[in-house]
Length: 184
Image 1 (cartoon, rainbow, N blue to C red):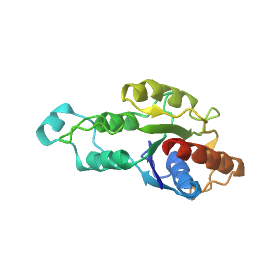
Image 2: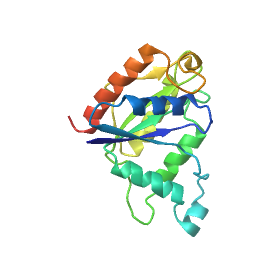
Image 3: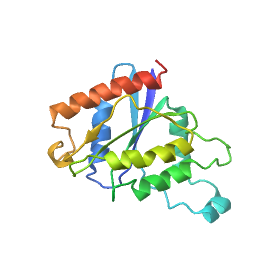
Image 4: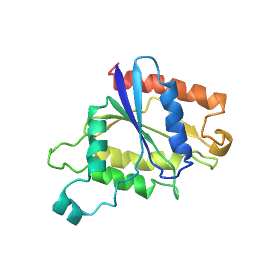
């Protein structure tokens, strides 16, 4: 069984990226699971708070999920041509060793995908992630690319993917990434 964890980088209730992640969970290949996670409850990083009280419970739970996964999907919006602040903040917390002294992203297989209302999908955000992920010691998968431009037309009002081409691209993306995460 290949275990994937997907993290949506948006806090919006009607987030296209959370909808994309939920759609991915329904399309994973047989023998693969995908746990959907969000960034809700993760506070702004503050080293003084970390020194005083350690890692917040929301951060510990997400770190444990990442550490237990074979692969991680970072489903990223694009804000001002780059990484959303809330997502980078979460990664800053997740990169902290905590009392367990572990770094869950070191060597972890990671893929980037995303949805955007604009015409270029999340191209610039995905590129902006690369130095961050390299610094964190991840094993970034480059076997395929998934960008959902003009996302409002790809999802219905309930967040269900309605574009058959996007569904098939997502299904193929997940199949290839699951094989990579499994070491095949």
